[in-house]
Structures are given as structure tokens and as C-alpha cells.
Image (cartoon, rainbow, N blue to C red):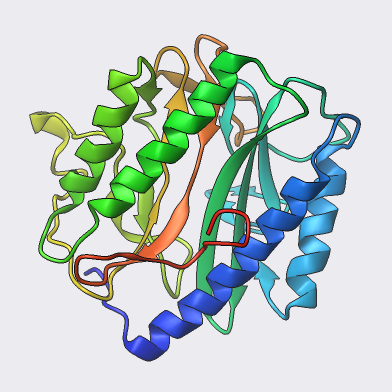
Length: 262
């Protein structure tokens, strides 16, 4: 069952989304050569807590694994779920920052990929195409249409630009839980896999986290021995952009816009 949020619920979702957006702005401003990813994580956690919210990722469990940080920070060929550490950022890298927060029982979730200093033109094009794919997917998230319209919009834009979308990880519903139904794939599933990703009709009040993960090369990925970090199989860079949105007639409401991306 996919939750349909009331107006009051949506305002609570928006408040959580605003915390996430402000956190990402703060972290993006701090990204520079020499800073460590653990310093960025501390910056984010302190800010989220100062807003009376909780970091949604810290303590998140998958089976016996528990994620110990407030941000997922993924560098270059790392797709998502990178773990903060004492690793220092370097000029020319791209860094994906994924942030979630819980406020008053509702969740917000957003991600963006940022260049460290000056980055090569092909990496910048990867970032631009991924951001554009996200916005095209959001434009397709209208009442009465279906999940695969979002998927098709993202996949078509990515592939016509010569990149690929990750298949093993998808977007999701969001609300009183960080991850809810329905899954939101960034590709139109083949016939044999459509039961895994139901092509549900979109209804006003449904909240979705739409999040293209786009690889410069092959779409295949693998997971590191830490159990979390997902890498591209061919070691080429990957980008990740995400917004939390609510279906709202023909104009989806984006809850994680910020002064930087609004």
C-alpha cells in the first residue's frame, strides 16, 4: 500500500526536506581540496541536530549492517553509500553527497554531486546530464500518470547522452519512513522484472525520492567489502542527484529545493 499524505503531512515532509536542503548547501560550500569526508559528515550532523532533527542515515540497518554516519559521501567511481573517513578530497574529483533527516516523524532525502575545484569537462557533462535527468523525471511525476513515465524520462535523457543508469539501486517512496513503497527505477524494467517494480498510477499526495544514479561507462556496479560502498564495475565516474517530491496535479512539489538549487 502506497501512503497518500494529507496536507498537514506534506507540510511536515516539507519541513524535513528543508533541513536536508540547508544541510547540503552547507556541505557543498565546505567542499574543497584538503577537507576530509569525515569533517563534512561532522558539519552535517551538527547542523541537522541544531535544527531539532535527526540524521536519517545514522544507525540505518540493512540486515546485520548498521550505517554509522550522517552522510553518504561517494567519490568519483563510488556510486552511492560511500562511508566518511579521513580521506582528503583532491582537486578534480567529483563528490556525491547524500543526506537524509527526520523531523517530527517525517523524512526528507536529497543528494547532489559536486566538483572539487576545477573538474574535467567530461565529468562536468556527467553532472549536468544527471541533474537534467532528475528534473525531467520530476516533470513526469504528475497525477494520473505512472511510475514508468518517470523511469523512461530519466533513462532516455541519460542514454541519448551516452551514459548509463544503474539498475541495482532505485528511488523510493518516503514519508513516515525513510524508505517506503513504491520503488522508482531509473529505467523501464524488462518484462521479466516488472513485478519487482510495479508500474503504479501516481496519485496526489504520494511522496517520492527520485534519484538518478548515472555512470559514465557501464551500468554494472559492485559492493565493497565494507558492505555499503557501491562502485562502478569499470571504475569510471558516477553521479547522483535526488529530490524528495510530492505528486501535486501537473506540477510536482519539490520539497528539497534550496537557495542553491531552487
